Length: 134
Image (tube, rainbow, N blue to C red; front, side):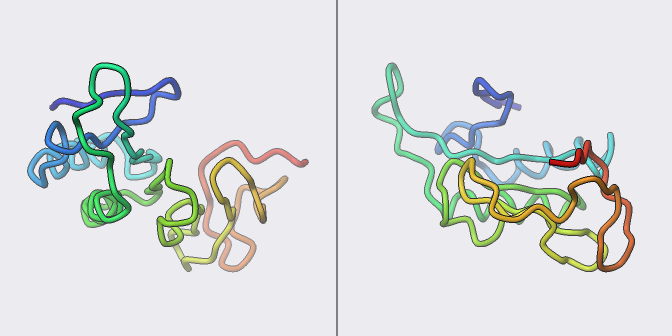
């Protein structure tokens, strides 16, 4: 596997480098084997410095990669670095009832229904993470 990791340890999806379906399937199966609750953040690449000739990751690329992770059984898949174009994949959804628990746009949190709780307020599913009161 060839995965680049940015400053936040999020895997960059680099077109032509690590974006083949086979590689994504292999990676996400490995993650599910460790725990389906591992959050997987697929992050868009923007060509800079020594990789200026590599095209940027598109929203379509991110959504296709995220779908592979969801099909593999990952319960918390996020697509990022292209705010507002990831079709809800910036948000945290309850894996039980699909209710939006944390709504985001880029680095901004617009709604946090998990503050001070460890369960979905709709169905009671336990949501792994650190959920502090604001």
